[in-house]
Image (tube, rainbow, N blue to C red):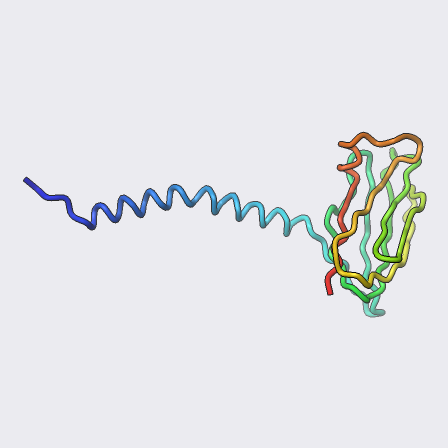
Length: 146
């Protein structure tokens, strides 16, 4: 009678562990990659001003996550798709507040974020309240880093 070797048992246990861990690692990698793919860094021009373009549509605000540097002037240029009428772009970062009508013609706003943190921007319908789903779709996050 042949006795089972410990090497065979170790290989079986190692294979079982890989099968169990692989889906978790794969899910984590996809989640992290998705977050990175969706975050946009505001470009700093030769004049020292950060710039980002934001587009508002009937069911979106793009980009959804915008990373900017604190204590660097920020120019936000906002426009809408042609089918979005009667909307305001709203953003408060510390003492800086924007709440202005936007339309297909690009409008620019300059703020100077000084506080680090996460701040919500919204493209909201001024003619009627947005549903919770539409509000969530038309919301973005400005992430201010030191």
